[in-house]
Length: 289
Length: 318
Image 1 (spheres, chains in turn purple, cyan):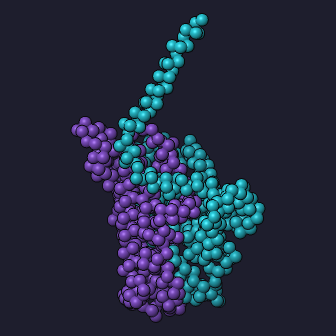
Image 2: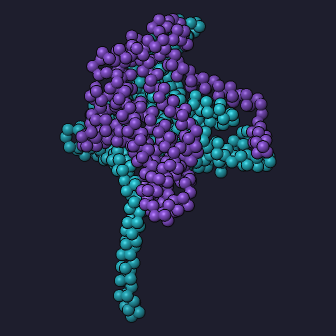
Image 3: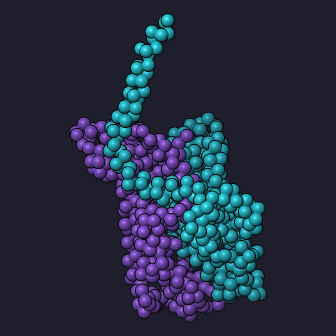
């Protein structure tokens, strides 16, 4: 009880009401700026045709309908590649890529977080340095490596490079440093191998970090349009299909809004589920001096 | 005399020393072989698609290479052409720096400011507001919503709104008018930019030791601004460093938003950036050597800015 009272008191320390009010108004205004386009997209997906093209445009839907989703299914049912194919490709890329990334990144993070061995510092410095430039820098050699491996126009070309996303390794390593050494020592005395320790002790202890890596990797792969590596129509992704639909212009506005809703709902739902774990992991994300 | 007698004795000792040092290193590697196995899969892919490509790109930037013939060494020619003979690259460079100078600091500041305000809220509201600010960055690249908002006809949301309230008489072509494109791309880029660093700041703020704050109050901290400067910021230095890396890298890599909104290439290159220039030469013109020199310049700009900022931020609160 007393701790709660102290906590309440300390929350009010040095807080002037006027500044609080100003800051919360600021928060509300920019919160609206952040949320309104997404709300608009949700509303658009349920608007019947006459409401999509009403002037002046309305923000909220009056008579919500599922028409756009039926149109989407029938439109894609008639096309050469059915919608389910795009969804299947996207799911395959996303699930394999995310699960594989969590597995590989945590396996690599465990030794880096817990032991000093020849090359460990250098490798980690390279990983940190690689956070400081974007993937665009390596686009051209990547294409050549892909064609040398014969991976052009396969889903492998999207999945494999994403497995070694350096940010995931960095966050996982920072989080694993919290695992008490005593736990690992005890297992070693009991005769467990490093692989066993990794799998049965380290992995269950870093579940929040799994979810964090998922929330970073999932939207990236889910929103992938196949880039420059994929040109067969039957290997394209949902995001690519969305691009094709919106190219249909004004006539496809409703269907486009429906696909956009599908694309955004999944990652947002995942974040809602995993939010507290993600915040827990991010607390250790800092770069030390 | 003395030296003659000691030398033969010392040499084998030295040799043994050196040999044993190698043996020790080898032993250390041998002892940690399990660690190398664990890191193996990740590191192989990481080196194959990130580390080696950077080096390879540097090498290619000094060659003429069109993917068909073997690369031909041309010295600094690509770089002289880039900086002296390529007017479009100058536009791209100017735009990239403009984007970076505006979106980088503003988004970094916004990430921190909103995380800081949100931290004062009760847990349920805090979770909700976190979602509100973070959602755009993970919503599956649906920035094409903005295409509808900035659409050039009356049905575009912004045009419709402005016409209805009498600010405009006829629709404005937001996305094909050079005057507006840059601003619009910046707005959308900022909308998307509360990402990983925002979460890191929220988390960092929650782990600040409350007793530090109370001790500070006893020591005469009078308002929240002093608390921010003397307690909050220094306690969060690791997260601040991490967030800076994320925001800087993203702010120099503006391309997807520009392509989605302004097209590729944009009208009169109004939203052309280093990355879209790189795409132009790498995926359309197939001048791989030249494109690699663009990539190398981008690499140096990103790494240079990041390292410099790290150095500056380490001074926060010292």
